[in-house]
Length: 418
Image (tube, rainbow, N blue to C red; front, side):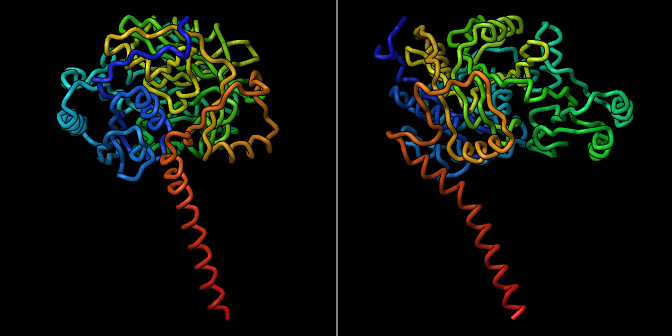
């Protein structure tokens, strides 16, 4: 096993480019990837919404390409934009997508992008299918991977029939990952308590509901687990990590706010077998829920790209999934090493409200270590503090503006009364 002190033999002649589609400037995953590769001396570039995002101000970023997108652009327009950036960089560059849209775009237009860019080879239709709740569920059924029981209604009439026999509560999610960029039927994961609530909501979902109705796994009987990994062109894992989610924001249904590395060989084996069966290559971020009622891990989400919390995981050799991808695509060996167990990841701007919410609910996460062996903060880093302060400014500013407007409106009301 390689030790952490062993230098990582990265190819510094090959840059990395953070690719994002849509407006979400406060993305700690992109900052983490810039730092991870930048600390190895790899030139780093990123697509950003403006010049003042946390990623744009990282000391490890060589250049930010300001290119605000919405996710509703034609794919040809997005490909042309990427190719323009590739010509500006002027040498083969490893692509690091941070969202499903980017991962799907790269896979579906691999032939056009393969000249100036390096990325894992994958069947062009697979990332889109994996990012779709329906596509993922069908693959799970096909390959015998446990998943929550799900319905993909084609009409309101089908929902009416289902409501008469369904077991409540249940959850509703958007069927396709891209719907959040357009007109989503539901916002995030929506818990539905009974038939009347379901039918009321369904009236607003249109003639062809773009939703999935899914079995609810009670949090008191469940544990949230995550798997991050990188698979080579033969779908062999070159880096594999498992951990447990302690808190998320919004509570129990949103982005990871606090998580720990916990060894789980059973879950790692399940994930590796599924990836081999479907023939995927690249970075994955999987969400699993362990259902203590039947003792099975059930796959909830498959993100065919880097997860925002990927820096939770690092091997004893200093390898994370982003480093593994760069090494593999540049023809370098990926050093072996066990994951650093007990390591903790904290997203500073959302973990505090998440902690308050979880304490009110009385929920605690099994398997979370009593003490962390080390903590990785999403934003703050001693060698790169500008992203942290930029995040604070952008995160706090809307709240301050709201309070200022509220104060001014109250003053006006008081003046009218006087």
